[in-house]
Length: 258
Ligand SMILES: C[S@@+](CC[C@H](N)C(=O)[O-])C[C@H]1O[C@@H](n2cnc3c(N)ncnc32)[C@H](O)[C@@H]1O
Image (tube, rainbow, N blue to C red; front, top):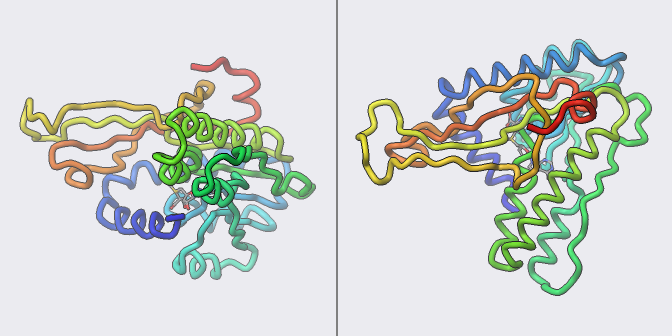
C-alpha cells in the first residue's frame, strides 16, 4: 500500500531538511515528555506513529516506563536497530485504523460496503498508562485516499477519510490511562525567503489536512517547515501547522472546537 516507500521518502527528506525540521522535532519531543509526566503510573507507554523515531524521545521514555511499545504500520530496519538498544522497548506492527488493508481490497472490487474503522488494540491492556499519537492523524486519511481516489466517488473518499480520523480521535478517548496527541492540522504554501514576487508558481495557498474534522483548542501549536523550497516547489515553502494535546481526554471533553 505504499507505507514502506513513504517511510523511505520521509527518511530521505529528513536528511535533506534536517535544519528546517529540527524545531518541529524538538517541540514534538517536548510535548511527548510533557504528556508522559502527566501519566499517573509508569507501566506501559504506547507510541502510535513511531515511524522513524525522529520525533520520539526514546531514551527518556525507556527510562520512565517499564515498557515502551512503538506502534507503526511499518518499521524500517533503522527503527528496529535503534529500538534494540533498549531492553524494555518493543515494536508492534499495526494498522491503527484496522481497515486500511480491507479498504485497499475493496478499492478493487467496487460495490461492497465500505468497512468502518473501530480500533480495539490495547483497549483491554490494564497496565497501559500512556498512549500518544505522534504526527499520525493526517496520515490515516492520506494513504487510503491515494488508492481510493478515482475508484470511489469524491464524496465516498472524503467520508471514508473523515471516518478514519474520527475513529482514531474516539479511540484515544477510550484507551485506558493517559492519552495525548500531536498532529498537523493545516498546510500552507508561502514564498520562500528571496522568492521572485508575483511569480505564478509562487501563489500561496492553504488547506486543511484533517478532512474537515475539527479539533479542540490546542495546548500548544507551532509551524513545521515540512517541505522547504525546492522540495515541492522552487519558489514555495510548505509549512504545516502542528497542534499538541498533552492531555487529549481533558482537551476533547472540555474545550470547545476552534
Ligand atoms: C509523519 S510520520 C510520524 C513521524 C514519525 N514519528 C517519524 O519520526 O518518522 C507518520 C507515521 O504514521 C505511520 N502510519 C500511517 N498510517 C498508519 C496506520 N494506518 N497505522 C499505523 N501507522 C501508520 C507511517 O508509517 C509513519 O511512520
